[in-house]
Length: 320
Ligand code: NAD
Image (cartoon, rainbow, N blue to C red; front, side):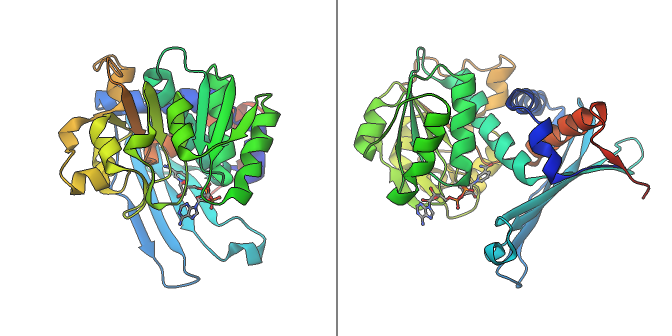
């Protein structure tokens, strides 16, 4: 099997490769060539850790595997970040394990790629103002991907903890764009594309804040109980997601679904737009992409990185 250490990922994986891998796997899901397996996520009763795995099989890309890991809230004491994960790939012809790949940076890159892919297909014409809600670890990756694949001229941002806004200001400066911290009514009125990436458990962006045409990539809600958007905003918008079952179960749309203002039939898998079976934004004033994070995204970027590592002599071969 091949091992690609976490420390090698930054030098191997490009945002373009992550974007292409995620776009291709969303398309494969829509064609019925690839499917995610049920997610396992368990509190293990040790170190307050949440551990789980997300797996799947892409029959088009012939990628089989899983991402294992989770959230260890006390990792600072070990000098580690709290999210920890590793991707394991298997040979779909034989079941032999074929690769183990560090999954921490890949998770950030594939999550950012998903929102950038959603903007490619759903952002209003001429989108120039990017609105960021959230200023944690993921937010910088989200902003970098949005700017790389969009045509944004300025960034505005808000965060529930204002002290963290320096991350957004620093990232915008790195990208050569002006940044301004604003309140949510201004953010909702001025931004053409909004990315929300927080750990909120109550709505932050309200229906009245958003003046279209706007595309919202809601990326923070990946667990039951989390919430970033007003369900009335969800009910007003045209809805897209990576996987419909996950969006009403653990994603942002779980709340509108619980209130029965939205059903699974109202939500379109983004892959349907990518393969041309759905028109996308059409004449909608507001579109929302609920990025719940699917295992096939992890497998797609891991498979891409294994190929790059082999080409560049950075993969380690071990007998198992
Ligand atoms: P982080 O801990 O670095 O930052 C947390 C962010 O959420 C900050 O903006 C913080 O101000 C805000 N926040 C924290 N507690 C809050 C609360 N109670 N109410 C409102 N806001 C709060 O986290 P991160 O690594 O940047 O991840 C952000 C979110 O994205 C997490 O919820 C994480 O689970 C989620 N995530 C989703 C995917 C996906 O595929 N959809 C992938 C990775 C991470």
